[in-house]
Image 1 (cartoon, rainbow, N blue to C red):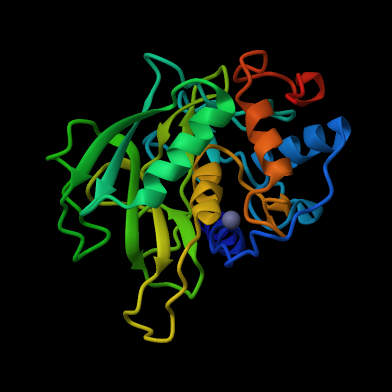
Image 2: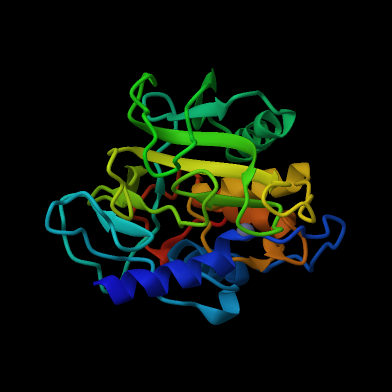
Length: 279
Ligand SMILES: [Zn+2]
């Protein structure tokens, strides 16, 4: 199990350490077939471009049913499916994702969520506002002051692991890939408590910009599109493809993939070969 976990983490760094993509580098528009195949690849893969599918998305829960060793695990401990289906947040009223801003508001946080909700056409996020946390030890954070025990936490300037412009991880100042618990209907219920946190929690950190500490040479600033890109990762777009980290950070192809993944006609569990393709 340990070796498997290590493999996933290594694969994950290629995925979550997103380079500062050129926003103006528009790619050719995908056909409907290409949209469907990009969704299947991105949603299921653990890392790398969609041309290098890692096939490691579905893991297993440990014996305590708390740690998921993959991008997704069924929350009842069911084994990895042989032919997985569309895996996504449910969204909409009653199923909003609690979202926090670490220390301060940044206009890119709001921009990214506004853009995603505009594309899918219904609310996904319950914006809880600014929080303060002691993150001096990334692995021992006390989250008990927050009104929910799960959600997304946006932060700016806490990403020290590389000169990349953003990442989604399971802790601040970390490249530890975030993963998720899902119901048997393939609806993501919450991030999982991964890698043996002593303080049990279910938060995904969406981090923008390189931090100047400890490497003063790392001053990469994330654009608005990179912020949308990182949010896309947290919403189940795992692997990069043309127009999503390959070329542009988030262009027309990425928009259409997101709109299709979250279209009301494609609920969680929709077979990949039966997707309604959004325009
Ligand atoms: Zn990325």
